[in-house]
Image (cartoon, rainbow, N blue to C red; front, side, top):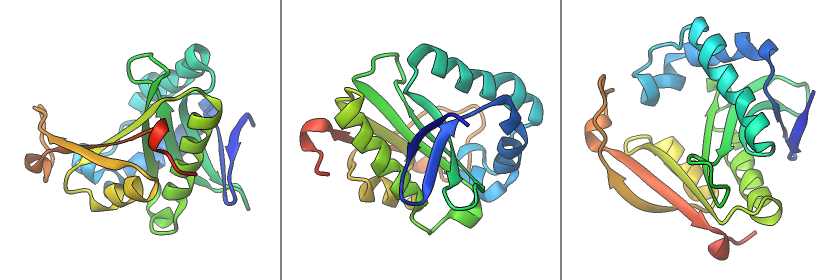
Amino acid sequence: MDVFLTTERLVLRRFTAADADALVELDADPRVTRYLTGGRATPREVVESTLLPLYLDHYRRYGDLGWWAAEERAGGAFLGWFEFRPPDGDRAEVELGYRLRHPAWGRGYATEGARALIRLGFTGLGVERVVAYTMAVNAGSRRVMEKAGLSYVRTFHEAYPEPVPGSEHGEVEYALAAADWRP
């Protein structure tokens, strides 16, 4: 196991091809994908031919920035993933994201992982700004962003070919600059 970061309760590690089943199961839960696809599952072939290759390529290109499998430190149960990657290749600004299995919700894992990634980004990876996005109606994700120290920046609207319920309210951007970060 190629561990990237550990926290009190989490291990964040690199994905491998062996994680396909866990990713398919994660994205099969309509509660998890509600604000992403309207609850539609991600087909196995997309996980295997698109998502996992994307994650693995980010390790090759950026090393310490990308998508990280999240596991419970005690017991090793797969919880989901965290994203901490440069959306346009510039390491100065990274996007924070997370997707956790429903049983892990409300237990502080998302906030714990997000805070740890932000700390590492600002103290060891040369990140200058962290951004995160979600649907305006996704109150749970917005709370995590706020608890992790990010602040609301704006609401914007995107044209989606298949809008999901709530998308009419727009997307929100949250951000935190290194100069404003308080450990």
